[in-house]
Image 1 (cartoon, helix red, strand yellow):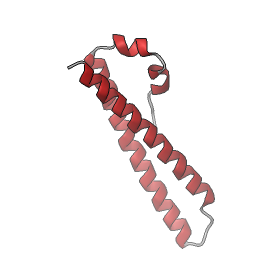
Image 2 (tube, one colour):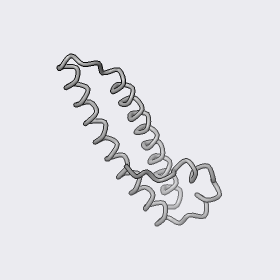
Image 3 (cartoon, rainbow, N blue to C red):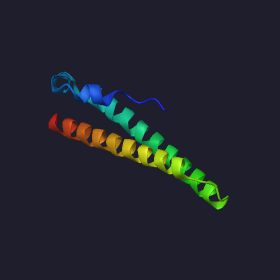
Length: 91
């Protein structure tokens, strides 16, 4: 999974201020791709947990991984929302 370093980008409000609408739309498109990919990973992880559970195996580590994936997804969704707000300001 290739994620853009949104944390570094949003750490600099000045950088967001100088970005044009096309650049922000490109970042938004990338955020959308990352969200879709994260959702896919989460689905696969849930299926893995269900399979392991049915087989009577421990799922503690898999559940922790799922929780971390869900946290990452929420962060990506927050970034997307921020970009949407920034784009709306430019209209």
